[in-house]
Image (cartoon, rainbow over the protein chains, first blue to last red):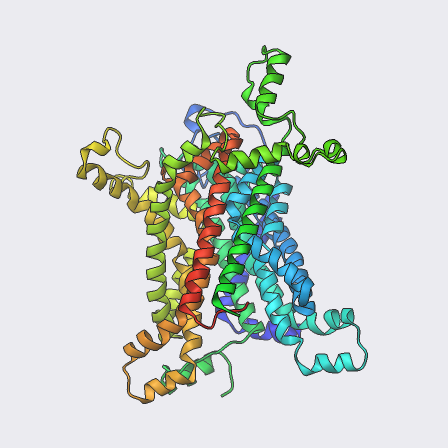
Length: 302
Length: 337
């Protein structure tokens, strides 16, 4: 399965393309933040009493927050923080999870058992309470949040990769490679890894949204980095100070921004997953007409 | 392998997991700058000797986990007389320390709040599991239809929305119609009988919906994919050929076989749902363990955090073990890994 094939299949899925455009829009906003944002969120502003939680008007399209600052500008800059956390933490967990999964699946035996014990252990421990405890002891900071999320969210990836490797390593081409003298390292990197890579990428995309939601939950619960205001941090401020005043312009935008990115990533991730791992497309309670129709829409030749 | 072997092994691993959590919990809070007494000694005027006396009283003059000097002298019992063993023996007696801010034993704080969280979690789980099963079956049966797409879109949306934000939206929508905070209207007491409990029930509605709807997609997706898999088995075709109605096929053949992955999923995601309960309790000021943790985070009340984390971790480990027991009863094939 090459990249061009993946892209050709991806392109034909309308929901996947919707997701891609939703994600690209946020990435663009994050990159162009200094040019798009009408104000600089870090700039000191002179606040008059009537500016505090002022509703939207022509100058401030999403109104102002409890410190009299422009909400829209914070939202635009917040995209940078949330995406940064999502992408880096997911990259970390992808790296750890894929490595553990490959090793555990390929070697099995003692090494495999030991690695899966660690995975199962982490899987049982409630993650959010654990992150809360670690960050409150260790102190706040964006890099600590990224590290904690990256180090705790790799378990699902590891199990997924392992189960794939277990079935791939029994196939004939692996036996043949071994028979002509390929070493373990070569088999893993040249023969098995390329086979599981599409699934790893699909899962990593889904993990970005998990990481963004995890960061926003941590920030909402008061453990965000106060110098790097993410969407979750905005919600923390908004919930503490604006909910009694029903300042929806401060409460709703950051939340829907998280939902927007998360929906985008899930659409892309599930589409990639379907391409990487085409599962059963039909079942016996279908009537035949439906089956043919479904096969046609999904581009399968019957 | 016998079923009893399977159970003994599961119990053994649950125990090991718990021990690792306890050890982790101990060392995590020891890497704090200073020691637990420092926060207790708030008056700077307290003289050195008095401070030392408190340290001795809390056993903080002892080595952290192993007295190497005494071990070298062959005094094994003395070598184990350390902060760690003191912590464990306190733990076994149910002593979790004293809250910095509330000046109350942590165990007492947890005990009076734990049932509130349990009620919330249980109600939320029941709603999301029942809804998840129904929606999942309908979606898989009508796979590819508009109904399926609609259910999947709804699942996608609820999966992508942070639990706390869903709660905030409900607070905004329901203001004036339903209570959006606390457990009971101030002034009412348990002695008021039915009025009190009805009031508590009213306060439970929004938190339960938040928790229930927020996690429904998780169960729905699992149910959908496992029913789809079951429906493609040949025995479903046989059942259809026998002339059984679709409803009977779904109920007697598909549901039963699809329930096993569902149980695995429920137990695997339990820790995740507990995280949701913390968010829900924070949004709705529901006075359970979650709200306690939120307050403790804000005030750096470490003994409370430590105790609450231990309680949550132990409950989730215990629940997982129970699920393993249930699993072995439901699926006789489960014996070895």
